[in-house]
Amino acid sequence: MDSLWTDRIAAGALGMRSSAIRDLLKLTTQPTMISFAGGLPAPELFPAEELAAASAHALAEAPLATLQYGPTEGFGPLRELVANWVGRLGIRAPTDQVLITAGSQQGLDMLGRLLIDPGAPVAVEEPTYLGALQAWQTCQPHYLRLPIDEDGLDVDALEALLASGVRPRFLYIVSCFQNPTGVTLAPERRVRLVELAARYQLPIVEDDPYGELYYGGQRSTPLAAIDIAMHGEPRYVVYLGTLSKLLAPGLRVGWIVAPRTLVDRLVMLKQGLDLHTGSMAQAVAYYACRDGLLDRHIPRLRALYGERRDAMLAALASERALPVGTRWTRPDGGMFLWLTLPAEDDAEALLARALAEQVAFVPGRQFHPGGGGANTLRLNFSHSGPPQIAEGVRRIGAALRVHA
Image 1 (cartoon, rainbow, N blue to C red):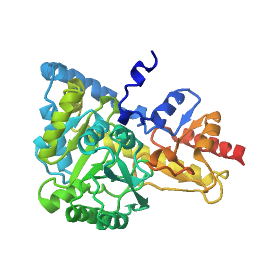
Image 2: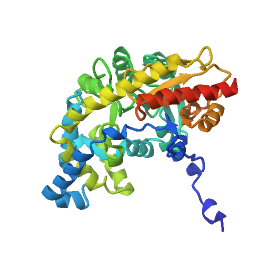
Image 3: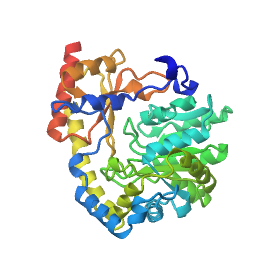
């Protein structure tokens, strides 16, 4: 009987693997555990009162739209609000080119279902976002891995790939404060990347959940805005955004901005997945944001997360147990930094010892679609306060001493 269902699992689903991050979250609920593993916002900054008020407004002012089935494309006022929000970034697209999703993760899943056949080439940064790799497991793509450095994607490497005649279905890129490394694509590379997209007819999926979380300077211009500036409309870049990192991940509200023909296809696909993103969540998001909550709340996030990033950088700089040659990124925003140990070290072995010391992180191998990155790890700094960050880094040092 055990094989009744397992013998019938589709070929594409046989290779599915559980997310290392989700598995670690089960362990990190222990009160004594300090977790640098998940990409978790700071819970003390959740705008609970504003969201409660928004829920009451939604039920009082629009009970049918809040509680009834809704259009697959999304709650109309929320789509308009998102169109205006991204329009301020230069992503000037009409409301009918905005599709509301259940978080940007659903957007990734839908794009994979729509664009990836088994064996199809998909270009990605290496390392890249684990959630995208997990979303596309059953699609069975062939990943074309492109290196990154402190200025983001190596556009020279991409150009060489395209010039050789290889034609990816699309390029996937986290353009700001990349997950997992924290690096951001440099301005001159952004322009050149969109120019390459036009020259080689390369679609780009731009994932931008962290762009507003900058801790100095100004916001980077999205690739989608450069695309629209060059061509007058969304043409080569599909843009994904979310409220998960800006308000609360529990809302599960994200969006896709895309050419109209692609939106039409995505709508048909979404009808078979969930009919529509939850009406209540969409209505709460709209009523919370219509009076400027995002403009009031995001500066609080920047101030707190910038302090926590600085605390983690300082803790790493002062931790004497880190092996000689250890290096880490110094992100200008976002939620993560990337630590590289000497080549002979193994982050997965270190994790086992770190968990014994009551501290968690994500080994870097998880972010490499073709293997590799054994001596790397991702550290999240948004969820823990400075004292916990200092103690957590000390515990990682203690785990390293055990190995030494």
